[in-house]
Image (cartoon, rainbow, N blue to C red; front, side):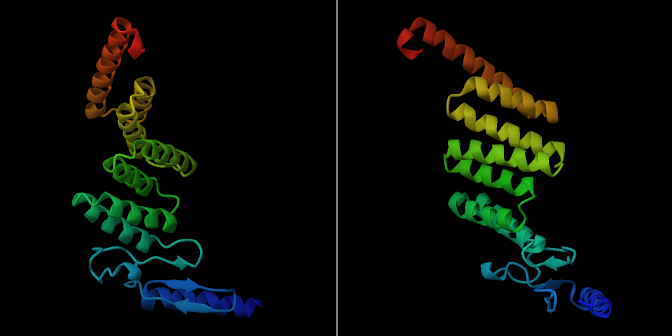
Length: 203
């Protein structure tokens, strides 16, 4: 494209942002304007349900942060109502739309925990940590990934792994609730080892 063509595209983009709140780009020669209120329309979410989200610049193929936030809100609603399977689906949509968010992956892990899918929960937490490290996530979000993974490891009976995960969580952020869970985990681990010593068949 020529300089004048690129300059025209920039001017059109600015106009779109001022009038519509967002601009959706196709190829280099076409620009499609999309009102900011059109968020996550496939879910049936109505305008105003997301609260006061700021308009963003939408790049096709790069995900849509507004839609990701909308999917998260639907996931939160389903989670609150203990509809964990539905919550997982919404959180997965949020992760697809914004793959850099550790929060959405953490939420998915919580829903998997609610379903009793503890191994999947552990794997999802590991993914959250990987994504969080790569995108310099808030240390509190990383701490939540580690503590949630530890909770699932306790359910699986992997006490040594759980203790390590709790320790890593506390390294990221000192949370009194996590400290209590770590103490409980340590006591349970010691009891399991004691029982195994008394009854070799349990070891």
